[in-house]
Every structure is written in C-alpha cells, then in structure tokens.
Length: 579
Image (tube, rainbow, N blue to C red; front, side, top):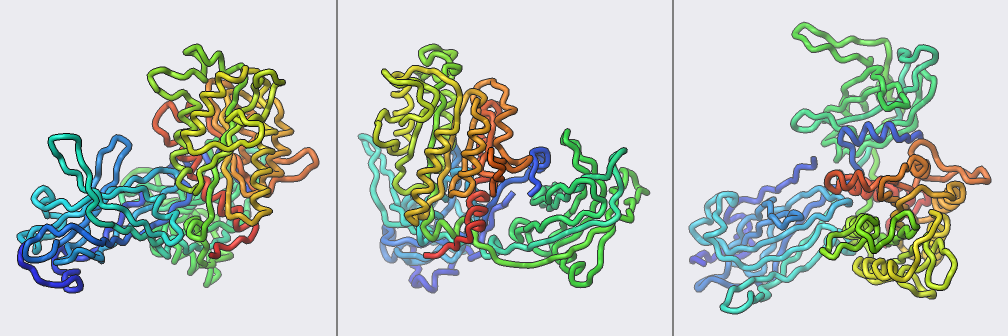
C-alpha cells in the first residue's frame, strides 16, 4: 500500500505516535452503612488491565510492499452498538506487527465487557496524520476479531489468540474468510495491587445523641475529575465512644489515583434509620496521612461552612490520628485466576406452590411462548452470563426444592435434570432446559426450606477442597418466599463459611423478605445453634423486583462482591496464588 520500505522495527513510530490510552475508571459491617456507600457510588473490587496487541499472517493488500496495519479497539454494547476506545499506531510494511501502543481498561468482574478489534491497512497518504484523524472508511479493512475481557484474563498466561475474520458480500449469503491471527495480552497494573493499610482513631468527638455518646464510624472518599465525591472504604461502627480506635482499613492506591490525590475522611454518628449525623471531616491525601503518622501529629476535624462568600469552616477540637500507615502489595483476584483458580456456578430453584400454576400466565414459573424469560430464567441468564467464563468445563450442579417429584414425597433438594445419580447439567442452556423440563415433571408443593440445598453445595465444595482443586463455588438460590427453616439455614451457612463458597439469594415475586435479610450478615455475623459465629459473610440477598425496576445494576452489585469474598477466603486460609 504505497511505496514505504521501512521494516517493522523502523515502522513502530513511523506514523501516528505511540501514546498509551487509559480508560476512565469511573467487622462491624452493617446494612445501613452499605446502603449509604452504594447510594454514593461505592462498588466492588476492580483492577486496571493493560492490553497489548500483535498479529500474524495478515492479508497483504499492497502491490510493491506489505500492508501498513493499525488496530482500532471498540467496546460492544448489549444492543450491538460499538464505541471506539482507542487506536494503535500504524506499523509500516509488516504482516506480523507488534504494536507498541497499549490500552488500559478497568476490569469489572460483574459485567460482560465485550471488545471488538478491527485491523486496517492504512493508506500512504495518512501516514503522517494523527491516528485519531485517520478516516477508516478510506482504509482497507483486513479483518475483525471479538472477545470478552473475561476470556482474556482467565487464560493462564493472560494471552488470547483470535482469528481475524473478513466478511465478503457476494450474490449469495455472506461469506467469511480468516485473514490472519490477532493476539491480545493482558497485564494487570502494578498499582492495582498496591494498598495502604491505615489504622485511624479520633479524640474528643462531640456527642450527637441526647442520652448517650455517639456511635462513630469513618467513610473515606475520593474526588472524581468532575468533582463528585465517591466512597472507597469505611470502618466499623464503635458504640458509645468519643475516643474511637478503629480496626485497620485498606485503601487501594489505584482506586484513589495516587498518594497525592485528595481524600475526604468523614466521621459519622451511626443511626439505625440510615440517616447518619456528620460529626466532622478532614481532607487529606495519603501522603498527608503518611506525614501525620511519621510525625505523630494529628488533624482537626471541621464542619463544612454554610453556603456564602464569607463563610468559613468550623474547626472542632476533635482530632484524627494515624496510628498505622503501612504500604504493601497484595495478591489480587486476577493473580489467582492466572494460577488456575476457577469459579464454579451452582443453582437452586424454588418449586413451591406459592409460585402459582406454571401453565397460567400469572405464575412466576410461566414459560412465555414468545420467548420472554420469566424472573427465574432472567436471574439464571443474568448471573450465568458473567460466571460461565470462569468455569472451564461448565458442568453446573442444578437443584430444585419444595416440590414433589413423580410418585415421590416432597423433596427439598432434588436434581433438576431428573437423575437420581448426578446433579450436573452442561452449560447455562443445560440449566434452562432442565428447569423447563422439571416444571412438567414435578408437582409444586412446599414449604420453603434452604438447608438441604446449602448442605449439598457445601458438600461439593468440601470434596473439592479435600482433593486440592483450585475451585471456588457460587450457589445461586432463586426463591419466591420466606424460608421456614431459618435456624437450620443459619447453621448450614455458619458451616459453609469455612469453605470456598459464596451464596447469592434472589427473591422473586412480592413477598416480604425481611427475614431473608438476616441471612445477609451485614448487620452482624450469623450464629449457629451451638453458638458458633460465622468466620465471614458469604451471603448476598436482593429482591429481584429491584432488578426488574431498572437495568441489571442490582444483580451486578451482587456479583461485584464476589471477588472480595473470594479474596477474603483466600487470605483467611492463607492460600497464595502459586502455579
């Protein structure tokens, strides 16, 4: 294409520049604080991943030389629309290019991030142009490849080679031809792994309660580019204490931006109604907090000024101290994936009679002839589409509960596939097929009991652990009613908390799920009949009506917690990500 004769090494900077692109990354737990954080934009763990691109055996479109390739990277929406993310530089005269330009993207576990890569042979006339100004419609299209970010990061070497496909229109159906290979390599940013451990305390806090001392907790937030304040972590609540000394919290430097990025640390008095009273705040960077620690000094809290040109912040006697400031590198979720760890999906479906007759349109189990999924199907699809990338064989245990199989008693844990010997089905479609088949092979009954399915899931997780397998299990329970075996379920969950297992509970229909929220141990850790306290919180619960009221963000918020629960288990058991 033209008469450029430079080789690949000479062509790396021949056109368009090599600048990198960066995507915009936009115990004491209790539900009220979590609601506060989520309402203000708090999300789960994420990492920055740098993508590197190379190609082999590209199609040669030039007569006197080889092609001059450039890659354009797009994100693909649910509706199929493409949004351009970045362009590489143009490499001259090469059919096996290795582009220098990297693209950094925020990896979010809870969403399916579809990527499309299009390779073009750039015409000579555009070689001196900024790559952003190159008109793609005037270049020769060499081929296209697509994948998800999850497919790349789950490879053991974080490298994924794709066929470049070139569609050709003919008089008949569209034909596709392979036009070389594109390899995408992912490398997690080192700053994604660097955290600062802080131990903070306050003195002489003012009382916000009439008849008792305040119940203080801290929220640490960052400022976005447009000035919004976004929470990144919180402490536990300490009751009746004006000189609280909180447990250590960890702040990810990548999430903050840098050690010099400004932070706001707000001290609140906890109220059970969720309307927490601001006691005071400070604004400091991590570098400032490090200085406070090294010098043994403190910072005064203040109350923000009222709106007005002459208003000033009210400085308080209350002070913030930094007792521990420790910078460390921690293993990340992606580190474990790179060492062969998998997430194994399991599902349990409620077949109690309160769902209604499956043959009638008002039933929660009604199968719409138009193909529109019911609430059960939608929950399976929404969660399954994210998790299936992390399970190599995609053999999923699937159970039903609360129904009477043909000629049998009511079962609170039966194999969805109808087998008496094994519980697994193949793939997400296998779950859907087994579910629809079961609707016509069991009689809906009751009551709603979770204990047996949780025990079955825990048994599978325990057997895998005993075999030394690198697996972590996620059980999705979809139900329409309140459980009747609350204490038995709590006993099963306390036992399961010691195992590589997390449980997502999705409530469908309009039932009152207050009791269900007890299982989501945000307010306090679950306790068994024998007084044993769960070592960690493994349950997340959401009413599905919250999901259906808008987009899938509520289910995504559930999934976003899974990497944190995974890491909590690994650190609790002191399991290192080794090959």
